[in-house]
Image (cartoon, rainbow, N blue to C red; front, side, top):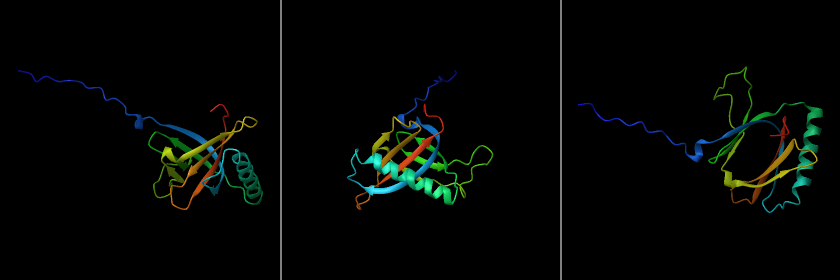
Length: 139
């Protein structure tokens, strides 16, 4: 007698779904956790100004890969296709739980730039504002 076998299709859990984006990390700035939405355009302008000043003195490419999933928001340096990933060289720039993303801002006048305000989670009442630039402004 042959055993009865079943083929069970594995359902993907929501944490399995993720997206990755190739972006430029323009810069970041620590801010107070009570920063309001109306203050964010000023903070983004400050970060962009600081990045243009530093790029004139010392040009640095900050091409990154942003991984977004229900479990985490992770930013890693984008090594490109020519370099193989090495855990001793390539490390995560930051990783947060999605619930720590406090605010998002997207400038309609310059759609290639966007920023996110992330609560640090520590007791020091600090948040960090990260500014990104997308090569493809439709994404």
